[in-house]
Image 1 (cartoon, one colour):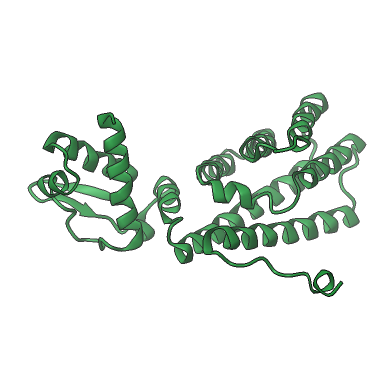
Image 2: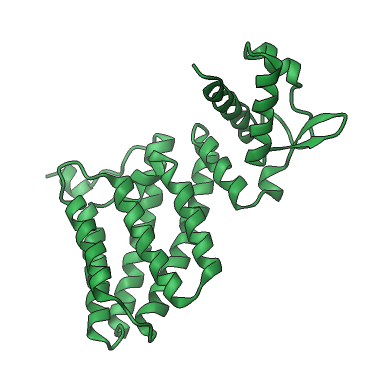
Length: 257
């Protein structure tokens, strides 16, 4: 095993301990010597490991003291939140709480972007949009769709809307959310709580609105809002099942059939 792999693996284990609260904010991290002894590595590699943990944003170097644990939940930015989410997956309560927050932010951002885009006067490259939706459909129809690839395409579609709207900060937030979710297989799977074909149908419906040139009707807006609400509830429920071991709800009608 290469030294870079060792550094990454040990840094991930130390980060997991921070995320789990095994190391408390303000406490000193184990020293270079202690890390070297515990993980059977030389001190130079241990120093690199703690440096990587600092790059995650989980600790900060204090001259003459070593590395101090940061209060990552209180003071961490988006990059720290991303790492924290990744390392929280073995701790269902923390992971589910964080995922709910991620989904809520993503839902509001995407829905507001759709409203602004469909009712605005932006020039829409219909051919480019339809090409992306066609690609989405081709992957969705595969026997075993690549869910990560599907989600990557959908993030790119929303990113294109935000770019057209000139919403650069929202685009940055979307990019960060996309990175958080795409790094965690359970989160990717949760976003396809329903059949991938349903995602394609929604994008086709949006494309039809754009083709009409008249913007969405009140009925269409209400329908989209209801669909978004139900979809994201299912996404969160699916993540609960995958991470927390919650049994899927039984359809009583089917059960008694």
